[in-house]
Length: 324
View 1 (cartoon, rainbow, N blue to C red):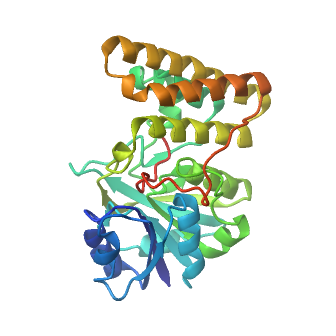
View 2: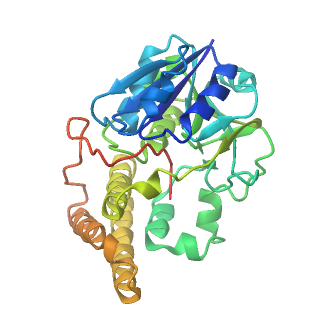
View 3: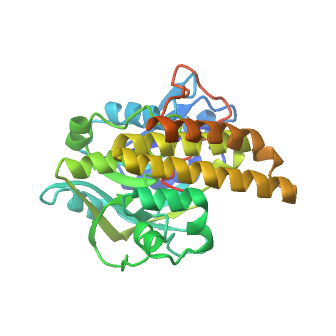
């Protein structure tokens, strides 16, 4: 028995098409809405087969996903973005999850042009070097560097079924017993980013495999909600949770390398943005990130107050990515 969890926040433009395809593929569908101010909930209510949980506050992605998982009776649960439209049967993912030592499985995400979203849809777990280069901007300007090629799986033949490390949480099936064993997503990654990376790393560390099944596909529009975030908050959420991931999973030297990369990269971005005139809207976000990264570099640990589900950010739209 398969269930689907969709986390929404102001997702009215996509949710009906998403649910039409989801209901054709799964026996149970739950939508957890994080305080949408558009008519997302009204549109969900047009589907009586779908269970809607309408949170009065924006609890963040991880907490909402955990709510959905807890409500489903299904042995296999697909976490699906509202801007992802299923194109094929989910049975191959179920079969992959039932294999020995499998804990999760994922399929291929296709962009609007029909091409695979290579570099996003599956990655390896980030190393200190990968995140430092990411923060410095080198992965963008020198995408073919060996660290980035490995991180974004540009060296893999993703037309083949295989074990992978970190597929995108936008289209990820998880065995219920594994989700329960791991305690779900870590809600400290609030309001979004790196919660799926952390979960899959913990899954791997428990001895479970994550299977890649490219024959299962979904059309994924992507990034529509991230760009709606105010630029300073977008910068802060990304780097704060990146540092939190680095502190949780890297040794002290690796953590400091990431913090240093963030500090240097943010200074460069802030200066070049001011010179070009395009970066003033990001100024407050980068200034805050620079202070955090500098303190983290000195202390070897993150010391900051993030928003919690009890301090929601009403401007946050649903977005689940595992990288930039």
